[in-house]
Image (cartoon, rainbow, N blue to C red; front, side, top):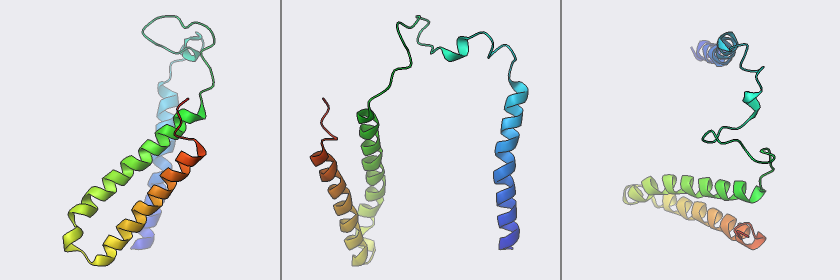
Amino acid sequence: MIGLTLVLFLAFGVMIPLSMERVGRWLRLPTALSNGAMGRPYESGIQPEGDTWQPQYVRYYLYALIFVLFDAETAVLYPWADAMNRVPPMLGLQAVVFMAMLLFGLVYAWKKGVLTWM
């Protein structure tokens, strides 16, 4: 039973993206790529000034990554805190180790200057 399930899962995992790609190619209009508008960003109809493809600082991505990390931490810790009086004490130790690792990562980022804005 597991073998059949695995084969079906892999078949659907390959066939769905391939069929989506085929349908996308079939629906694409031939004039969409030829008029040059596809390469320009659209921001409220105003023509862009200067080069629109400017490199972004890595600092913004690091801020976003740290935000996502601590947002996920919050999503994990709220149910953990709610169930704390109904679970074995070992789970509390695991929560402390989890928070200590995240705190170590935050201190490391702080010491490296990642959190310094300018």
